Amino acid sequence: MTATVDMPTVRFGIKTTPMHVSYEDIRRVWLEADAVPEITDAWLWDHLLPVAGPKDGQIHEGWTLLGALAAQTERLRLGLLVTSNRVRPPALLGKMAATVDVISGGRLVLGLGVGGTHQPPGAGGGEGANPAIAEYQAYGLTLVPPGEGLARLAETVEILRRMWTRNVFDFEGRHYRLLGTRCEPKPVQRPGPPLLIGGWGTRLLRLVAEHADIWNVPGPPHNTVEYVAERARVLDAHCGDLGRAPGTITRSVQVLVSYDHPAATRETVRRLVDAGMNHIVLSLPRPYPQGVARWLADEIIAGRYWTNPSTARPPVTA
Image (cartoon, rainbow, N blue to C red; front, side):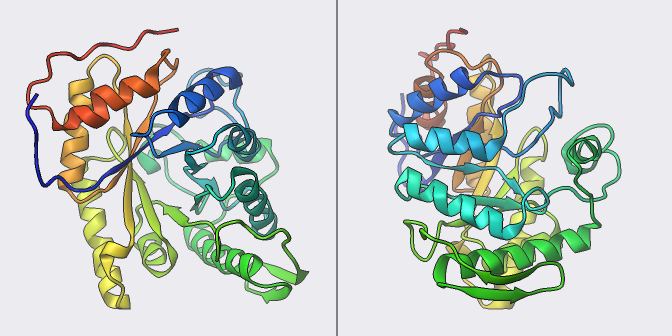
């Protein structure tokens, strides 16, 4: 093992996609991760139907599951990558988020994205038709044009801020109208949980520069390291236009873990860190092996400094 000096400060989280996997397995991994200090945060997602695999497979609703896990963990920061702005009205989301922040003792990070919009096949890094079409039809939701989705997201951010900082307020926007809105109890974190905005479109990155504490983007295999780096430069340019220091935004990226080839995952992480990303979310394929949180800490997080690892051991599949 060879020590490396002057490495950038990088935080690591895990993501357990709650699709085709049991609540018990997700809970097990989160409790494991809560005891592993190298892992700082844990994440779910926000879909209502499976987007891969059997269409009749089980999938858990993200915010309900998040509340349960918030009550059983003690240290991990937690959230959704990312909450769809099209599924819940903004004030309802603000109330839910405040409640989860109270349950967790102030550990929530509010991950937020545009949600379902009209997109051509293959958009978003996935093959085939836009999966949001079937999902939204099944749950009585509507897709909107991308521009409208962005405008709605901007209004949601403003509503959330008012809910968490004001006793009572009205809101008159183009898409949302509220009268006499209150939110008690307020979040533990003041003035509210950190805001993470996920996505990579140029107009979306402008919104990140204006409002977000954290920017998140899917990395390999959905987007290449080079594309992530190019999008980061676009965000930097928006920050420059607004007079905001780019370094005030955490750069977060999701990476799909390979249990069989951890060296490949380590190399991807190294390249992303070299590209300026300072928050790595390790997305876990199913099924989740026993002891996977400790394995990640040993073989991916600490292992990123190794020049010739010789002690890598595969996790034990349950």
